[in-house]
Length: 478
Image (cartoon, rainbow, N blue to C red; front, side, top):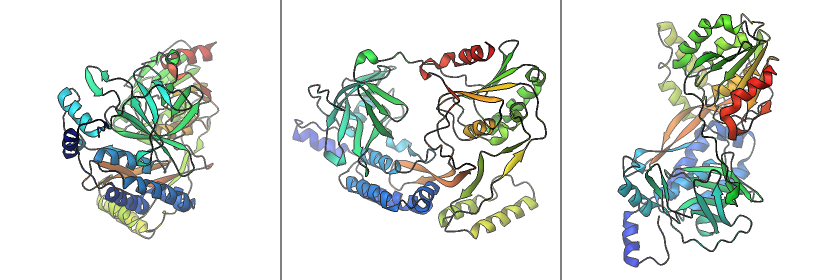
């Protein structure tokens, strides 16, 4: 929504007609109702933890802001702000293709028209570097924003682009375009809605420390351009393979634990078993591994674990059995792993057992696991992890860390491990949907990794990630 106070009335009228109008209060009423009935993270964090009072304060603030919102794009931001109350990395907001009136961001004319019609634009002010106000430079120098006071639509501040933004021959933003919205939540803490250059919102806690401004873990801004750092553009290999690094150290790269990759992992381990059990050290690189199936990493455990019995890091899981969630499981009861009539009967029996627990979480029993074989070699196993590790990859790391042979290097993982089994929640007459989680995970020691991630034993500088393998190899072979 492009608003400049000096704009001509005729242009403003055209702008209003071009807007995609939205009854944001109606959208939020629908979403809050669905989340409160069906979300596992809501049932866990609000109902079980008895946080209704805090939640209601957040919800009231969000609904009040929604009364001032008139467009789909603005409403996306408020929906994202509402969802930020729940720490659930699997429960996310996604835009649909209907959000964009063009097929590619290479269509510069259509992109410019979309930005002019849907993105607020503000005049830059004299740079007033006071507390959070003033100009800030993104950590790699890609763009800069000016943070200004702005009390409209429930906000405290806004951050706008200081220059037109082009990247890879694509026009993605005008000088003055809204990039960040800052809100004070029910606890008086600053929360930010950050708009990607694709105009998709994400929510982050705000941390201001002198001349450094951080939004969550990933977005860092500096007051002084001299602090801009040359960022390592390294991306771990998007493949799975084995490599001998030296006479003492082997290396396995696993880019995904997707079930489709299991056969490749199995074959690599089988083909290189003799090499694996003849060297002192093994480096397992799971950086940027978004997870998949636990079955994919089980063949690695004999080389990693120092005991045959181990605790499952996720000791149990429990479905939030709302009426809608039950119906979803009922409809899909024959979709997976049904090959015989007995499989169908078992599925029917399981769904009838689930029916008994409608209105609450299903009961659970904490479990342990056992492997038939463990190898004495490798003597030491080193796991490389980063912030893009998620879900079952985090389960693999938690399993491996039970072994005295294992040490982890890198940075905190993504924190996508406490909730799962999401289903698609479509939103009527709105260009977005939500991946609503239906199951919570239970940990043996009551740990909470959601959005925080699993801390490595030894932290490595993410600005030099391309050197991590060499750093670890030198450390273990010295």
